[in-house]
Length: 507
Image 1 (cartoon, rainbow, N blue to C red):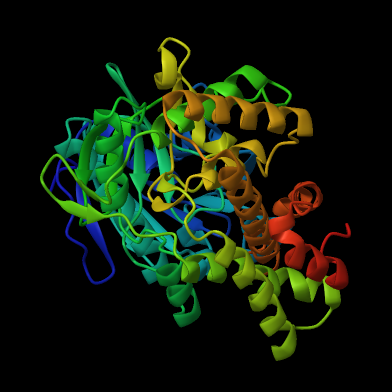
Image 2: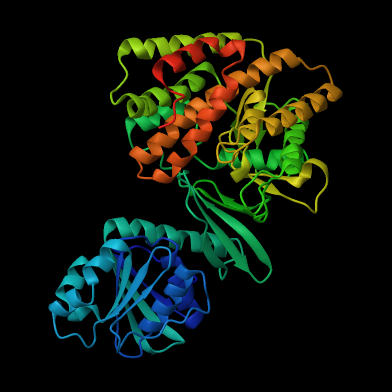
C-alpha cells in the first residue's frame, strides 16, 4: 500500500509504503500535528532505514522551522528541542543499560514533553511504555515500508490525522504542508494548509458530541453546533449576501472536515493587543448592515443540504447564565449555591428576559469579537470584515453581537470606544429604516450582562475543570464590563443580587 491511500487499520496498527523521501516527510507531518506531551515514539529499523531522517522531519515540523538543525544524537545520546510541545530525541544505540536512561534524564523528558527514541530495542522500559512504535525497513530512500503499532488512544489520533491527509488528497491538496493553529477554548482543531498555489485552513470537527450527560444537555439547550453543517451552510449563505466569510473549498460533512479560504492573520487589534478604533467601528457598521435585512432561519449548502437556525430562546439564555452559579459562585463563596439562591438567581434573570419581549430579533453570530474577526484591508465596505466561528449562530436579539464586540472579553475596551460603536450602529440602523433606539438600548444592556455572566462562568470552568488557568486573567475585565452595564434600569434586579453575592468584587 502506498501513501496515496488511507491505510486500513490493523488490530494493532497499519503498514504503508513510503514512495520517496517526501512521502516520509509527509508522514512525519501527519504524526506531528497530533502529537502531545506524554507521547513516546519508538523508531526502529536497521542502519540506513531512515529513522533519523523521519525524526528530523518531525522535529522541524514541531518547531515550525524547516531549516532547524537536527543532528543525529548517536554520539551525544540525547538532544532537546524547544518545540511545541517540547521534544527530546534519544539514540540508545550506545547505551550500556537501563541505568543510562536515568542519567540521560529520560523520565523527566517523558513527563514534561514528548520523546523520540531511536534503537528502542536497547531498553525494555521504552519498548513497554512507547505508545507509538514506527518501524522503517528498506535500503533505499525511494521506497521504504513503514509499520506502525499504537495504543488505542494514540491510534485514534494518528488515524484521524491520516484521514485528514486522505481528505486533502481528494480535494487536490494531498502534498500540502500542514501546520496546526494554537489551541483555544474550542473543541475544534484547525490547521493551516499550504502548497505552491494555495493557502487554506482546515477545520477538523468530528461530530462526537459531549462525553457527559450534563455537557450533552447543556450543548442541546444552548444550541451549540455538534456538526459542521451549520458552519458550511451559514458560510455559503453569508458569502452569497456579500459578507466576507471563508470560501468553502471542500467539505466532508459526515467526517467533520472542512477546507476553506485562509483570510490571513491581520485582525482588529494593534501589535500591542489594543483595539484599533476604526476597525472596531467598521465591524459595528458591518453588523448594522447584517441586521438591517431579514435573515430567514432556513439556510442550505451549495449541495442542497438544509439547516434550520435555532432560536436564542429563554432556555438557552438561562442555561448560559447558569454557568455563573455552577462555577463562579463556588469560587467566590467557597461553597455551592443553595436551592434558594438558585431560585433567586433564576427569578432576577427571568425578569430581565421578560423585559426583552418584543425586542428586535435577527441573525446573531454569537461570538463576534476580536479572535473571530479578520481585517480584509484590500476589500471595500462591509467586506473588510472577515467573519469566523459562526457555526453556533442563532436567531435572537440583534443587540447581542454588538455587545460581544463593544465589550470584547479579551480586550480592554474603553467606555468611550464602546459608546462610539453604539452610536455608529444606531446611526446606521436609523438611516436604513425605522429603528427603536430605546428598545435596542435596553436589549443591549440585557445581552451585554447576559454574555458577561455566562463568560465569567465559562472562564472559571476552563480553569477548574479543563486546567486552563490563562483564562482567569480576563475575569477583572469582565467584572468591569458588568459594573459598566448593570446601571441600566432593566438590570436593576440583577445588579442588586450581584451586589449581595459579591460577584463584582475582584479576587
